[in-house]
Image 1 (tube, rainbow, N blue to C red):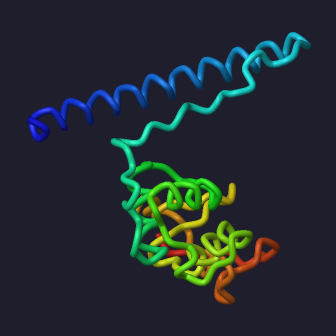
Image 2 (image 1 turned 180 degrees about the vertical axis):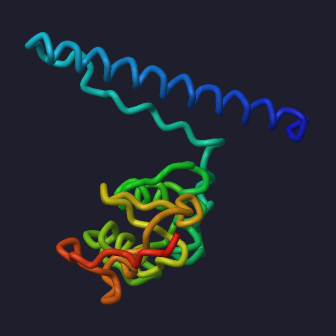
Length: 164
């Protein structure tokens, strides 16, 4: 029975995600118009509510390496997330930070460091959130941006002209 109903639940969750995004867009427009009118924004919460597909098991991430657990979390969430959000999600799923030797006050920082050290799997967006590199096929790697071969923005060198 579960196998038959699972696709229906997934489809409804996708539809719900689209509806929540539409509500967030409308709230943003209302807020912008109110600001243009010299009034305070009406909606402080303009981001869509995050709905994960299914509930996380209390042992979902237990015994896993941090990169594997973070990758699973991001796939379930389906969007880039802050290190704080990832840490909370992993904790909810039973990730054992103590086994990693991480002090409680360092959990978020260690997650951020771990993901940043794995650019072959994770991509840090300019807004500070982390996503899976596969989601951003056109992303420019930070190393490529710092490449000495790349001309600087003040460069006056033009590309070679072709005869035509």
